[in-house]
Length: 314
Image (cartoon, rainbow, N blue to C red; front, side, top):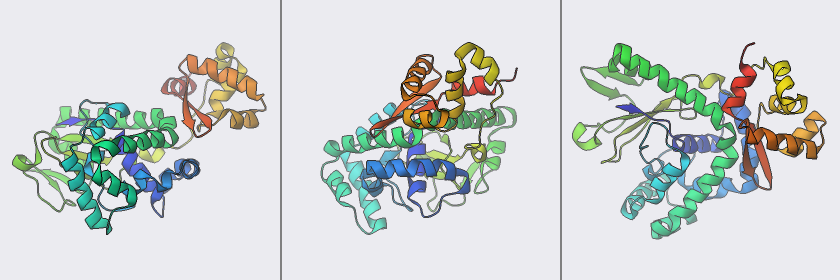
């Protein structure tokens, strides 16, 4: 048994959430920012829209088993591109059966898996830049805090305490892991070796499983701390930071509570667009902001380092 933080386990559930008729209250601030970007990029009617329906089965090849505790998106996309053609077709068959047929893009993927998987991963990269990359430092901090907490649970109290506290539908009894919502029983001989536990900010309110031997089974569960994910972060050291960074750069950092473009930041702060651009370049070079392409514009976001600096107490 091991833990892993998986970018793709945020891609699928977050995309599904955006397509659903109702957005959970906790994620509404994020969804309100992201939905217009997706519509402008046409992602609400692309490959992912056909492969990730609002409800029901999602092809398992979109969630390759993470090979380390914190794989990056590129590693997981490489795993998707390497999916065997027969597996892709088998899982698309199931998707078509459950959804009453495949969309036009999914049908071309079925016909030419090796040629089309690259197109799928290209769209995933675009979605990542628009919807998740600007917020990844914040999301990852929540996921890693969950892993730390639960790893300590295992070390101090054993696997039973971990699973019995994970979710009401998960329990550990007599050396057996029970999943109330799983329709098909799992045995060690059919499920594959080991178990991957993957916290997710967008998976919820119940855990999900992926079982694709010989990969270890995956159990993705709602991470602790998601409820406060989009709450404003306290800013306590603006005066001290301004003495080091300058007032304009510190002001821009405080304004980046949510990702924004140069034009938006200039409008909010009253600084010139050229001045904002110059300051953002310096902040990016210092590792305090990250830049993410969003169509014709670029979104800037605070990094984890910047969050720590702004929240640190004197």
